[in-house]
Length: 184
Image (tube, rainbow, N blue to C red):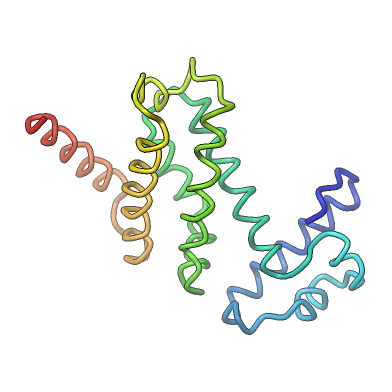
């Protein structure tokens, strides 16, 4: 993907991403072609290929942007990581449901597993509650544990149509974690 910061390129990438997401709401992802995306945007074919290599590249870019937004809030927000995570999910409910509908939710987990450790290495940890919780522990394993655990819960929530109360899910997780303290 070409990451030109030219305003025209930024607009084109946004238009292409929006077209793909719109089409994903109408058709199975595997049936969507680059030609359909281009027709949906009215952009020239070369504009698409100037910005992306494929529709998979477009989706990867959207996922990367969402995770970047999520990781930045997680790193900068002094709130409980669970509050940040569930707020992010509620804000991006339609996107998560689109990924689920198309059997692509696993792409989010794959990207989280690569991006969150990278963010952890470059983030100022002074404001991050997550960094404070990790303390001196080996971050690679703690991050993998947390990403796997919480995002599997999120995926279950998405499986249920995100109709269950986010607060109730958070309370259940917090209660479970308090029970775990008694066994260590």
